[in-house]
Image (cartoon, rainbow, N blue to C red; front, side, top):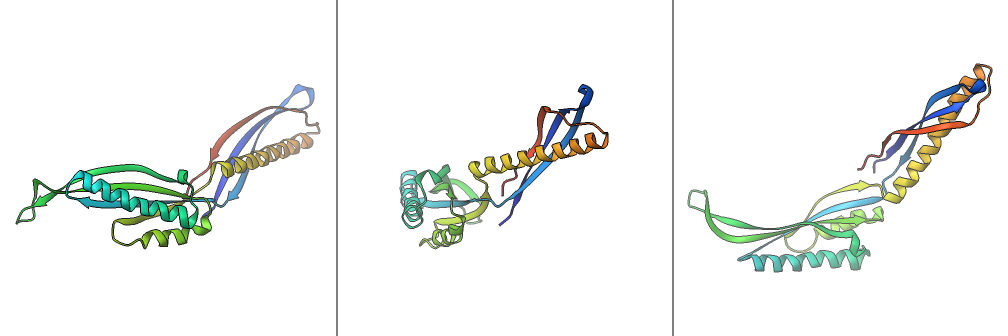
Length: 196
């Protein structure tokens, strides 16, 4: 599992002696392991008409939903359909060329499953992939940082950035034989939180 760094720059303006300002930049970075996994699942079914294709898809999608909910306690809100499509399947002629004649219909349900306990991700991948038939496919998995952890990490990085900036300013002022005053201004720059 990859880690990322929440990094930012805090630009501080502090008051020294004789009302002089000292402007410094401080940086803070915090390594974090993503705490959520997002699994992409596709359910594809075929039927002689749109109604049959959709009905079959609903049945197979329900199998996935029930497996995730009953066996792995995934919340309803963490199982989402982000795209659903129904498309015609055209016949081919004797030469293998596609014709305008519709042979059947495909219904495709693109689902995303957010796994809050990443230790279960491997088992869930295997379980979904082993559902009987070839209508259910696991398309991939990626790891993300939850909003709660993201905010916590950014706050930690902010604190580190301010401390770093203050340390730099104190070093300059002390070297110049002056005293460090109060912070006049803080500006935040370059916040970067990559997702995996």
